[in-house]
Image (tube, rainbow, N blue to C red; front, side, top):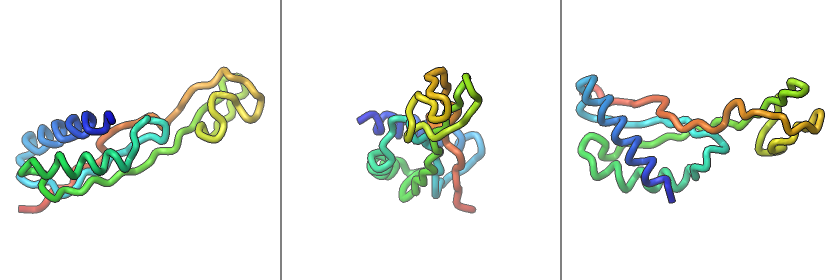
Length: 116
């Protein structure tokens, strides 16, 4: 379960941003997680709750996850299609000369703070 390690990195980055902006309490973190990023959102959420509550800055802080659909482009015909449904093989021309456009993201989109 690599989600716990990812949570530690998220907490590190949130704490750094809070410090830089003089924030004393974070109420929520919004993540963009790609559909093929290998992260299991339910595991990430479970790990988040355990780890965030150990930090005064993050006690009770929510974690919201936006799932970014995976999209692949075929370099042979230029078509774009859903990666999960078709994998590397283009459903339009059957070429395997394809590239993932999006869906592998793991990024902090927003940090929500309490007004104090």
